[in-house]
Length: 562
Image (cartoon, rainbow, N blue to C red; front, side, top):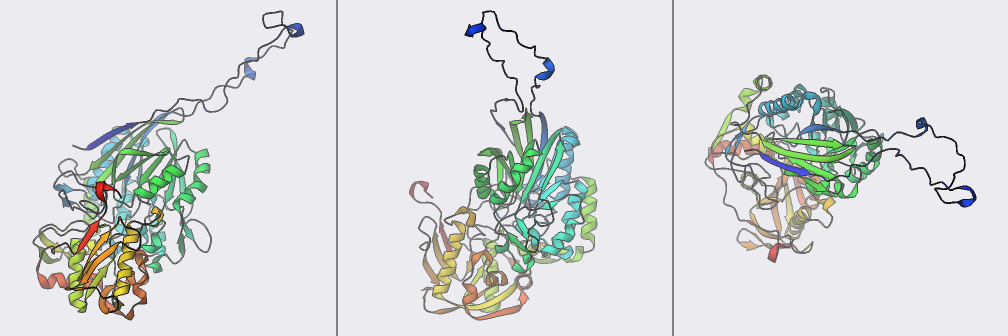
């Protein structure tokens, strides 16, 4: 059964505009009280009294997706670690309902068409909250075009740019905007040369269900810390909260309802709702949450709909006299036994894959067990990759940035496409020598990333490692969260040098890992990480998830305190 929840808002049905004033009490001659013979007064014409005006009323539906990550095909899930953000003990509990085949853009399109038929297309708005077109092999081969073609065919009307929507450079994002009929925007992604928002006005007003729905797009403010800085050299990324303060008042003036489409994540969106008045709804992304029922923060209602085109959010909003009177939110998990794929989109995807089918579907190895990714805790597939990279580099330690996308490899054939879905970015392998003290500093930075003093400074997931054991206690003060560190069978020696293999992103400072660039003997390999991993999978033939437990993560103290 689909998850269904209803949230109602008690709103005073107040008047908007000019209200009728009561005439003053009159007095008789010489100050006589009312009731005495009144002095003569001119008659008041009904035309002189302003009419009572009320705000608009109506009902409309927002359909919303987020964090598709170029994932256009269906996949199989089970309870537990089905995708990067589910079954992860390092973050808030998030699960799929049950095992089964789920998602795929064609099935998503079928669900959208059902809602449009049921509610009337003129009453339905379709938006996306970013991290949309990259992070898959097909996306890499076509620089994001396949997802854009599918979205345009389905009739999306507005999209916020996510941090991974710049993976093919800002210039390619600009070119992709020219391919589609809907705006992709971000108020806080600023072009250095002009001071203007990237790709133009980050707002739009669309009439839906007879109401003027004002839309504002916000990007992730730490975008330049999550990917190659070369891709966003022409841009700066500011606070989405500050941008909302600038844009919302004017948008409010020309709209009946204000909706922020945000790629900031649930934590920052909660701050947005609490600090910026005038927002009615926040359609979120970035953190891959299922927010149902809609959550009230400040004056705004928040929603979000998982990831990987596996779910469709449906939010129906009733407005009475200019006020949100009721919201009804559902997240439809798109299981194959509930939702049929739209035939037109099956054909479209097949045509987009045809030219690359041999490369996409090449079988590289076989998975003997589930091999999944976790974001905020020790990740099976990243530990396996670390082992492969250490073997390739003959290194003591491997370090990889914690990544928040990707679906679990299920037992059976592992294709080239599946490996690129986990490691899509062509980051070069880097060899570096770090002291024990520098390694400790890097581990402490990972702890700070997960739980900084200021929630606006959160960035990335847990640093993924191989060849090293350590304990991370997030209940302790910053700078004292890492302990019990050992390499091999020996405690970490702060004065000793260790051979470390990592990638170009960390060398460049991704997720604020600035210490690695200060290491000795830095060598950039000609090989990229994914190419080395593909060959390592191929050599092994059959692979399993590695044994876990090298990272001990403590997220709460006695009684669950955080």
